[in-house]
Image (tube, rainbow, N blue to C red):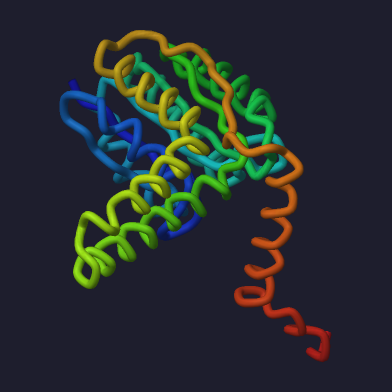
Length: 236
């Protein structure tokens, strides 16, 4: 059995979509192929991987309550390919959005369900996750905690550092628990070739705290990546 995981995030690295697909792969048996769609140059390579595949798993961000435009363009080509090659794939989707409500991903799931009908493929379900950016922050926090744990173990010994690390790890796992459970369940369903249903979850953080944290995060990102004064005096 061969499963192709298609990352639909335009980001080159550290995307939430890549992270979530990695969780699904943990319990996916058989041959696994990782692909990423970023521009038309990727189409031929990915379609070649799909030709002898049994399952396709899409991981992508939610853009304006729907599928990103570069993914829609790829899906049109994939539809033609599946019809020409008479492919009948099992298709799964993991999507995430900046909104905290996971059900905000429902329109995207409906798009993929219709896409499967057009491709003569089997819609096997998906997971829609809210607060995707915060999941990425939690992943980075875990890496920071792990680094501090190693440093403290060297300086103070494992007996002193492990209880603190364990507590921090449990906090990260708790907030991401819904995403972990549903993604792992999807991996089991893929291995069996069965439906996983359509499930919606979110980062397990109160909404008012999520909004506050998200505001701070995006302000910092805009300053360092966008430049708070960049372009103000540029000739139009």
